[in-house]
Image (cartoon, rainbow, N blue to C red; front, side):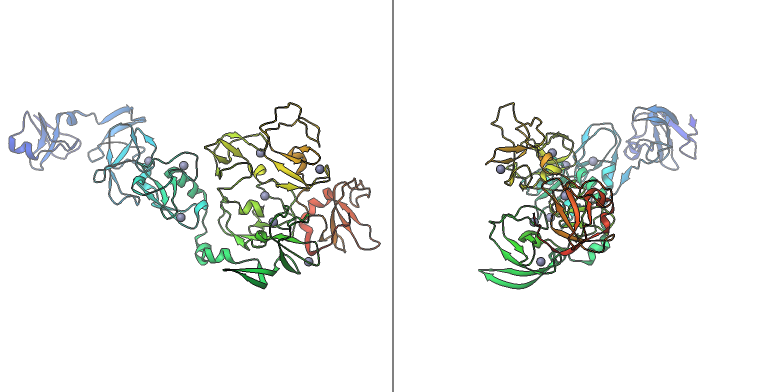
Length: 534
Ligand SMILES: [Zn+2]
Ligand SMILES: [Zn+2]
Ligand SMILES: [Zn+2]
Ligand SMILES: [Zn+2]
Ligand SMILES: [Zn+2]
Ligand SMILES: [Zn+2]
Ligand SMILES: [Zn+2]
Ligand SMILES: [Zn+2]
């Protein structure tokens, strides 16, 4: 019996059984297995097809493995493939592993050694190393870079267990990394992330390789925004006792006398630690704020070029959402939004006064913000304690002044022991949940919602002067504790709250803030402050 099979040019001869000698060498060209039982063969070419493969239809209907298209029987490996997709290769070599991966054409559930997630369809194996992986995982990069750990790259490892890590926590998501499978890691820093978390994060960041390679990162971050005028030695340390800071025209002197009620012109927060001040004007900087780098990389930004320090304008911080900020910030080439000093410099593992453990920023984390009680799907969380706080609450000032109380108000992180149902905000007089954060004056027993205390103008410093395009004299930012009686020069309504006022004699120009803000780009901070008379 002879047969013309589409997979071979010569006619094939039927044999009920192969000779012993033939049986040793005969492999079926269809399935690759040793031929046993009846077969068709071409002796001239040493071509064999066993009975099953000979009878395989040249076209299958939709197969459960691949339901969308019909499968065609092919004469070369892979034996069955979809004409449309045609992307299943029998072997694939990727940079992620030194050996070639071979297709395992059997539908078995498996856990991918590259990414640690389950698979149940197409798998590839490295039989030398005993690895099984998803097809897509073969093309993973072996080295990635993520914004959260920018100083080192992370390498892919198949079996993390062979490294000594002190923690198996993924630094990107709240779940642990399985030590039996792969992940990306920096073993110097004990830093691991899930393969998929790392891949997602690294694909999200645009690294400006050129810009980065031009500068040594460590050196670059040290490029400071001040020069030292005078310094003293204190043991091993050299301390700058007088500096000239970029943001101010006069020299600034170091002090640790924190008895006064001063607010930092950089971060806008109350000063309770060492600071620099100007002996001529009302200008203060926390020591740490004065040391803010002139340029920084912002870990959470897609654009990974450095951001530059700004100090001469009023801006909107799009992380903590404080609308007007007259302090320091960072911006990227004028066009990508600005961040206040604190938001730009807060790491992805921040500390929070309201929680004893370090938090981690997660893109996906469901919970109720401990500060304001709002439902959040991302935020800064401590997963062990199921604690989450959003960026806005994390950035609330610890100490703030508000006209509702003659004393400074202190941020209080909820009071679990208060069961009274009669807690009201002393500003809006609405009910207040005592478990959530609030501002408090212990002397007067004033308690208020943070949202009632921290308003639009909380980060505008009264007394700062600006050059305004539409007025010949410098204008001073004022914020009266009572309704300001003067009429705004633009809208003719009485000026309430924040305003820009001309202090030039005989010039009674005043603009309420609402009329200024549309044109806030026309404002340029003058490097001297005039103490507010109020
Ligand atoms: Zn995988
Ligand atoms: Zn993860
Ligand atoms: Zn590292
Ligand atoms: Zn500060
Ligand atoms: Zn000064
Ligand atoms: Zn901010
Ligand atoms: Zn909140
Ligand atoms: Zn008080």
